[in-house]
Length: 314
Image (cartoon, rainbow, N blue to C red; front, side, top):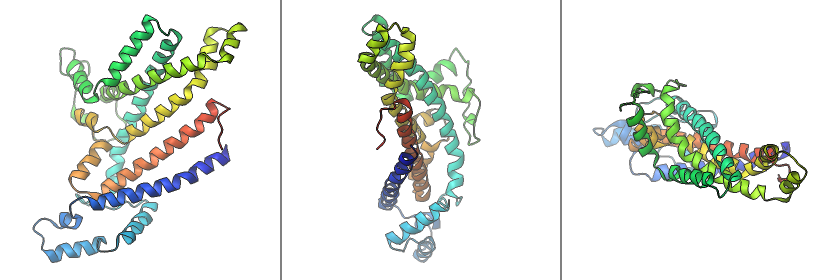
């Protein structure tokens, strides 16, 4: 296992290098001159040129890239073009808000999705199975922004004002109360729960039909033990893959949901930075998200071995 982890970490290095090269090149292809933005629209050509020299924009692209990577390894992702603040400071507050929502939403998706998928698989082709799959299809097809608006209308500003809606909740202040999380978590977790439910059902049905399950039943093993100790563990491998991908995408930020609930997360940060041609913030945010996504994939790969000893790690 230790050898596998080291090998997988080494394999992620070319991926990260490729991501940094791609992001770096794309940022330089976007129209707009950072030096002009910093110097101001009324700046003379000489002032703009001095700013370009100070920022190192006159250096060849390979030189700029290696300077950026060298600083990034030391934790310096540059400074924001808009306000001059360090990029890491810009990301920190937004990042933890997104992590909070991603963790809560993933937990909700796993809980609802596994529960619904197991019931649907154990009662396949019954009215319960059909009903659960119809609800899952509805949840999968429903746009997040529409569900968010409906939840606000129903539970915040409608006749049932159980959860007062206040945009000041979502300031970059770290972990918040359950009130400021419940509606966006439900919004983000619904689609994920639908995917997990359908994947759990199909995977469970495949496992339940295996010979060792029939043998366990023939030996008189209790159905609950068969389902939760034998079948579910082996059926979780594709489900874990889906969960990892969903969690990684949530870390990238969900722009529409963050906009509906006025959440100052990573999604809005990246969009605002792109609009302002704030290249250092975009590069830093994408780099951080890529690192986390690779880490999540590594954790998913490692978890395969613990779920099924037959999985080959070579």
